[in-house]
Length: 131
Image (cartoon, rainbow, N blue to C red; front, side):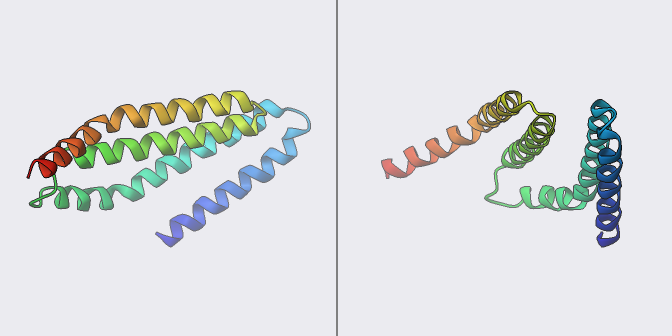
């Protein structure tokens, strides 16, 4: 895994240097290179998370751990990561308002995805207060 981090860091630095060199003549190509590197790094990170996800799936089958929690957690983490990445790319491109809009949309999506979890929590609280 540490070798993969080294490769990712090297790739990112190369894209930064390449982007700095071509930014003077063509900002669009520099942005495209950065977006391409972000996608590759994100795919690599997802690949690295597969063992952790399978271990979490094993835990989700344990007693007292409702099965619907894991998918909600994975979805919210994915939305947060992609939202932040896209927001930073927009900010780097000089589009702050678009960046804020992406962050807001990601937060709204996280809220919608996690509503079943909030419902479940409130049901537990209601049961506890009845006792």
